[in-house]
Amino acid sequence: MPGPGKKGNSVLRIDLIITLFMVTFGVLWIYLYIFQGGNTTGSKNTVANLQKQAAQPFTIPVSPVETIVPISTRATTPTFTPIPTATPVPATPTLTPLPSATPSPSLGSKYKVTFTRLNVINATEPGNDAGEVWLSFSVNGQTKRWPESTQYMQLQTGQNSPVNVEFIVILNASEKLNIFVNGTEVDVAFDDPMGQISKIYDSNSKFGLGTHFNERSTCDKGCFSLDYIIERI
Ligand SMILES: [Ca+2]
Image (cartoon, rainbow, N blue to C red; front, side, top):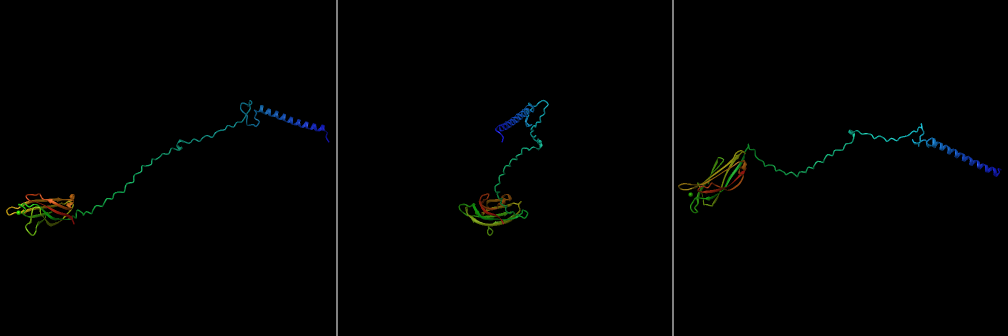
């Protein structure tokens, strides 16, 4: 068995080996740090620390160059098209009534003129005596007399009498309806004129369609008026 003296020598040699190793490592590290610029890993040396004629690779980070887009291909500001003004919705159109059927002017239209009543305004007789009244009618060339069966009708001032005298005429749009009535009061020596009613109707006046009341004569010595109706038949 080894004595205590040999065991102490072995420990001493191990310590010595470790010390030598550490000294050797320290010298090597100092050498690299001083003569190799401290770049013990080969990647962290600086220019200031480089020795003359020494070389050290550097990697310069380069940022990627931004791709320049030609102006013509750059996105342009979109053009905003204004929203058109809303057009108001028109109200429901007013219905236009269809014009009433109008016969062709070339064919003409048939009209009936009916004298219905005579009103004696002035019988030209003294006091309240009755006058002897008669009428002559002319409508577009057709003539009639009233009363037909006697020479005259005895009527006082203010009295009236049904007449019922009719005419039928055919007119085109360019023709006119001519009405003429003459009144006479009969006397022994000289008859008394009662005036005339003269009316002309055309397409502008719708040929006088409708009822006419108290159309007054021109009132000469005597005076009268008539009621009459004009119809299209
Ligand atoms: Ca008389």
